[in-house]
Amino acid sequence: MAILVTGGTGYIGSHTVVELLKKDYDVVIVDNYCNSKPEVLNRIYQITHKRPRFYEIDCCNEVKMRELFKKENITDIIHFAGLKSVAESVQKPQLYIDNNIGSSKVLLKLMTEFGVHNIVFSSSATVYGVPDHVPKVGGCTNPYGQTKLDIEYLLKDYAKEHKDANIAILRYFNPIGAHESGLIGEDPQGIPNNLMPYITQVAVGKRPFLNVYGNDYKTHDGTGVRDYIHVVDLAMGHLAALKKLEEKPGLVIYNLGTGKGTSVLDLVKAFEKANDLTIPYEIKERRPGDVDENYADASKAYKEMKWKAKLDIVDACRDSWRWQKNNPRGYDKD
Ligand code: NAD
Ligand code: WQD
Image (cartoon, rainbow, N blue to C red; front, side, top):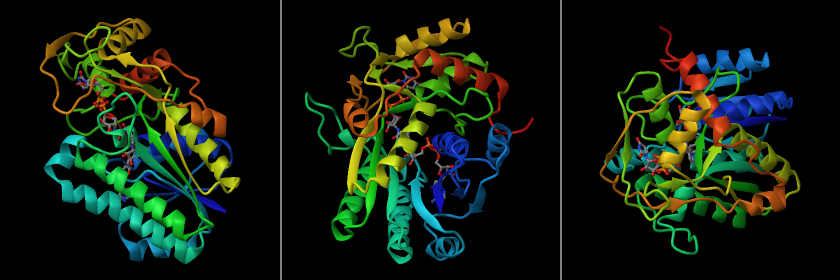
């Protein structure tokens, strides 16, 4: 009776593993460390005093994954493993197709082979494409987003064919924040693509100022509005989804967000206030592909799973900074 967490040493995976261990789930992690570090496992131990079983395997490697399924009694899967850089996916679409879709296909094949019925999948708000008045799935603006949408379709087909399958597709909005211990957090390699890690790297002196991409959007202050969700709230959403799957609901889809929109400058101000710091910034050109605003209707997740975000952006700003301040070089040791 174990939960297999693919990508469990990554940013969202590690926070979810901590919450699973706190609730005494038996956790097995698989990760190939293509975007994470072994040190994460020590940090998980420091927080929980537990060491989940760990396999360094590429989830696309069907042979090695089958060995894992033979050894472990997997009953549920949380599938975080995937590449997630929008910009890189534009440069290397095939890599994203092979890794993200390939790993999902291997998991589905092994689920059938080993009689595993339950899977929670990390999807993304990016599947909504460019939001109109009514959010519509499709029209993804980049190959990364397209892989998420394609995997959603794979899962839907799988559910049609396998009536005993229970699948939760979770569409995350913008995860930020870190565990309150400051021991685990987001550790981007190279120049961060996302706003919060860029802000924290400015705060720690690694970058001179924040580039604010555009101040002429149709929003209250002209900067882009997003739905920033604390990563621990997001982690709890996965525990809620596992519980939901126990009810054998078939395939369910939920948005995980706060429902609140925050602009780039709102987030900068919140970070400055929460941490008593100044973040220098310069207004730059719009980033191609960015939209004015995007925030979640997460009411279905509350109605059906009784899950809602409890933390706010002030908590996230404080926790992101604690993580960065205590780990200026991320998981790399000095
Ligand atoms: P992350 O890069 O920190 O974690 C992903 C983990 O998966 C990493 O540890 C990486 O080493 C591992 N991995 C990747 N491909 C693998 C493979 N083939 N085999 C084994 N391990 C592999 O990313 P994250 O932010 O924690 O995101 C987790 C998931 O959530 C991803 O699928 C991502 O697309 C999705 N998501 C993330 C965001 C976000 O903004 N962070 C938003 C929406 C959806
Ligand atoms: C947020 C806002 C930027 C960086 C991306 C992916 C999405 C999902 C989450 C995985 C925007 C502005 C940013 C900076 C800035 N990931 N910004 N200066 O673009 O909403 O979503 O991450 O599924 O698929 O596309 O998040 O954090 O990159 O940007 O001004 O240095 O911050 O223009 O308005 P985004 P983000």
